[in-house]
Image (cartoon, rainbow, N blue to C red; front, top):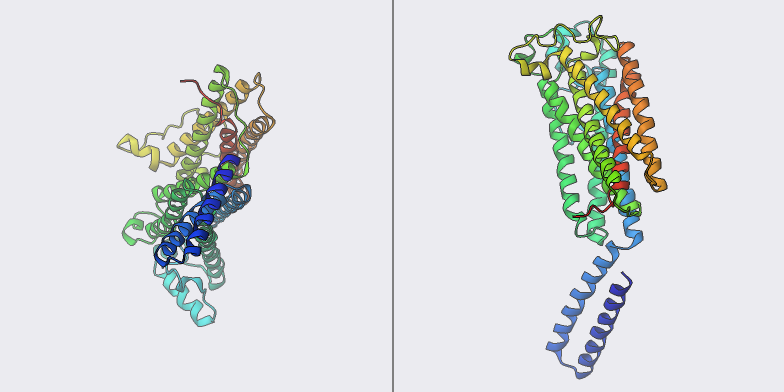
Amino acid sequence: MFQRIVTNHSIRNAVTNISKRVYQQHNPVAKNIVQNVRKKFMSGTTATTLAETPRAKKIVGYWLLGCSGSVAGAVVLGGVTRLTKSGLSMTDWHLIKGMRPPRSEEEWLKEFARYQAFPEFKLARADMTLGEFKLIFYMEWFHRMYGRFVGLAFYLPAAYLWKKGYLTKAMKPRVIVFGSLILAQGLIGWFMVRSGLDEQTMANTNEPRVSQYRLAMHLGMAFTVFSGLFYNALSHLLKENPLQYTKKLGQMKKFAHSSMALTFITAVSGAFVAGLEAGLVYNSFPKFADRWIPSDIAAINPWWRNMFENPTTTQFNHRLLGIATFSTIAATMYLSSPLALPHRARLAMNCVMGMACLQVGLGISTLLLYVPTALAATHQFGSLTLLSLAIWLNYELKTAKIPK
């Protein structure tokens, strides 16, 4: 870095000296050429140098960290919205018009009448009062407004940092990808809500709800965006500590990667449990009532549909994935014990293990207590916390060089 700055400084001085001589000769054409060359060179050098400075990295890193935090907040709020069955209270979607909630009594009655025309009211909430409707409406409205805030918190600073040259060449395409995913997430959210408003789809059910497939897509996208933002925030804010490769370290890294992947998969499987309300099917642990394998685990034909549409099977799968995730994390902890890891890597490993224990406890408690809203929302946030810690651990191990 120092040599590059010195070299750039020398070239800038050379360009300046040449331009001075040209000015002294009063040659308008040559002066024009030198001015253009100097302008291009100076702006390109400044942008490159600025993006690589510690200050720029810190600014971009904190911005990405803030964005990942806002996405985490959206996940929690979305979970509470689902648990309170508020997600179908707003029956249309408008980017600008939808920002303003009803104000007068007339507007509220009109909005309530619109809600009454859809399956959720007809099949499950025919006795709902206007006051009760206002509560679920405001919950969904706040979730949507918060989603807009997440978008603004990303797009506006992204445009400013791009224009000012704070983003490196490698970071720019990532910003485009993140921006595209955030936009797609909003569209997926409405795509999900529409599945619960469809008259034909809801005709054969007593409890209207959104498609569990679309719910899993919506949650999976949120976790994907969070993971990308959080990992890139770490790469800007934390100094890399290269580790010397050993066979034992390589083995630990494989388990650490598996732990992260399993945490993500288990969280997405939880969306199927939530979408089918499978947490209310068997409220016992470790057995399913008095059986280790429930009798209705393959009640649907063809068999593969049980994996995604049978509440019993989705709960069974979620339990198995949770056990597999915890076991893999425990194995990672065991493999790390004899290794002389740097302080941050050791701290990350301890945090992952501790959070895994807490998350298992939250999951079992949520099941045994029949899915109380506060506990279920905490369990969902716990999965995101565990994933973030697993990402941090893998970042700390990332720089270990594996020989070819």
